[in-house]
Length: 255
Image (cartoon, rainbow, N blue to C red; front, side, top):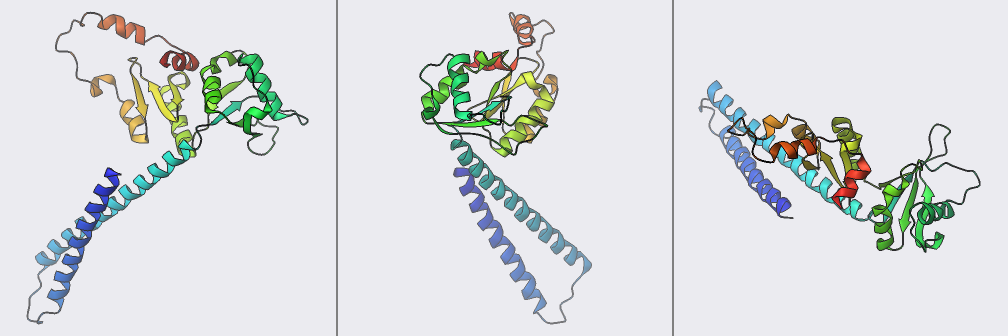
């Protein structure tokens, strides 16, 4: 909200400045024809007008970004009770709710789950022989959803995977982060995208600019140590951070 109020205040100031400039220019036009207009004065006024126009366009972009961020955050908050079950083989006669309940109770070892535990449970998209459609599940109880998410690593070896139901914007950013840092170095938690850098440092990603910044070599992001000899424990920390962990293990360690 503070960001939006700052943008609104800047817009009013720029709008007043542009209106004042137009008024001054119009007053000059209405003066006596004897007033000499030089190329230098026209050039100066053009530069001023250009700067004001570009400032207004930037302000408009900022406003659109704020509204976009607000909409995305609102939509993500409404997806908190949802999870996606991926790679569950399709069957024309399947009862999707029963299938998911069986996976949760048998594979994840969470008792007391039945089709009534879901407010919604269905596949996404049109049936196709080219791919297996994911199953979207909305849980009645947030605690059950959290328990399922925490035990998603139990699906390892089954062929199934469980992921968050990200907004289209965050899903696109997640895919882009995976391309930049690798599948095993990216994960999401409560709709927030994280990456693990080669140094072992974990960073939050909220925009394409974040990805481009984090893709830079560590030496260009962090200042080097003044001494060529590593500080005590630094080498061990770097060695520990360079180990390769699978995505699910990383997420499990975070919790």
